[in-house]
Figure 1 (cartoon, rainbow, N blue to C red):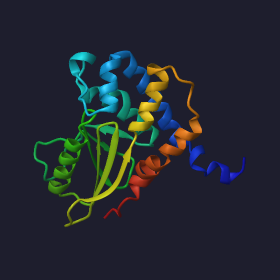
Figure 2: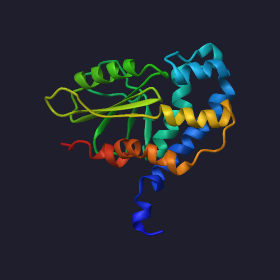
Figure 3: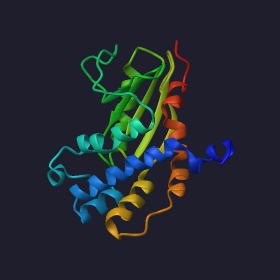
Length: 208
């Protein structure tokens, strides 16, 4: 295998790490969520019920999916960061400490990506320490914004992991289907890691 083989999307090591994160999540999701409810959450717009998993849905998705995926992307993840000028007492859900730009991350439970978007844009509008990168996620979908000095937040990237999560969850729990080719899944995750890796976040906008 030469360098050109390593550079192919299906061989990307970051995508492989994301796949492993999703596999771990799917195992926990199968253990905690009854099959009928799991299907509704994965395939429809049904909200994940905290009473069913005996944990807040947002906390569950952060602990068992988002933090693990963040590590696979190369993030040094810090929850509940404080001290953003302009936000008052409001606290974002996370930041990334190993990139050369300020990052404001907002998380919501699965199928609440619109709410995550709304709050992310609100933070970016009000935060005064520019430039900024905003990340909104409900676990299934990841959206990135940028905010330069004296400018409105601008949409940058949108990636969905829902189908990959569905396929792996089905493989592990629904129909016990044969193990899907990981090179195919890695290729499908390539755009995600290309847009949301720590390296890409760090160069999304020029720091001042």
